[in-house]
Image 1 (tube, helix red, strand yellow):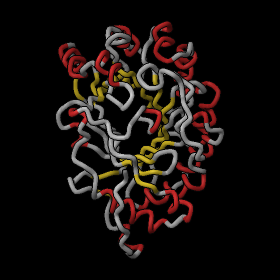
Image 2 (tube, one colour):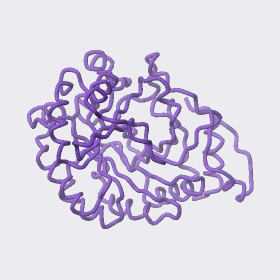
Image 3 (cartoon, one colour):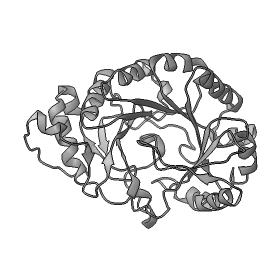
Image 4 (cartoon, helix red, strand yellow):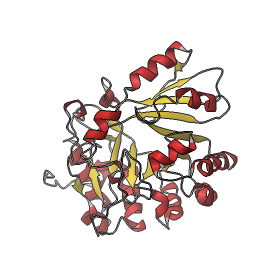
Length: 341
């Protein structure tokens, strides 16, 4: 259950004194904003039985999204990533991108998608101001891709990435969840692809959620093993950029593409945390694997930025130092489409 923290009335000018910071000294300039929990893929590590609707409440409206962006921008947020579920299932996604990009103080608008509608909509997204694109591709083998996701869309998604590059979206990342029985032996194929493809490929360790314990035990692969292979083969660590996520990135002079590793089970993973999350229902989540989330929607409906900022600052005081995944604690996270990872 959410912890109720009483509101303390403050003046508007107090809210602009500093960026968001927790009691552990971490500063938060990056917001992951879910605009829907609906997804049309059936990835075996997330929604193997497909999306199941459990809540009839409507997702955040465009007006509520605008209010969130304005409030977070006031508190030093400079990057907003649109997540789902699958964001492209919202018919107003282009308007959402345009609204976020027009928010004073927001420098970067990013989107994470499964790529299902990439070739159809990337032109509109680029024209609306999209800066960064993340696409999920868990295998470069069409048969394996279909086995993991439930869709025969690999070639179309790859074509969409090429189109995004032609349209001038310079920061393109491809996400692949490491799965022991499915794609863990595909590193040579991924490396061959990166030889002449200018993207950042990010291998993500499978994380345990509330409903995948058995699958996790059977398929978890440590990213450290991949890291060791990269270092042994001449890949070099890259400096972490401002507002970047937790990935450790590597480059190689013989490859056009880069590699990133997201290893939530590694030591001190949470020490570099710089992001907060808003669910599609308007709840603030301090951690992907935290508790149920804190209700902000009544404040969003009132469009009271002062109270929204105040509430977020006070709730942030309760952010814990770590996610406790090592202890098998997954919080309220049942599957990743709830918050977009």
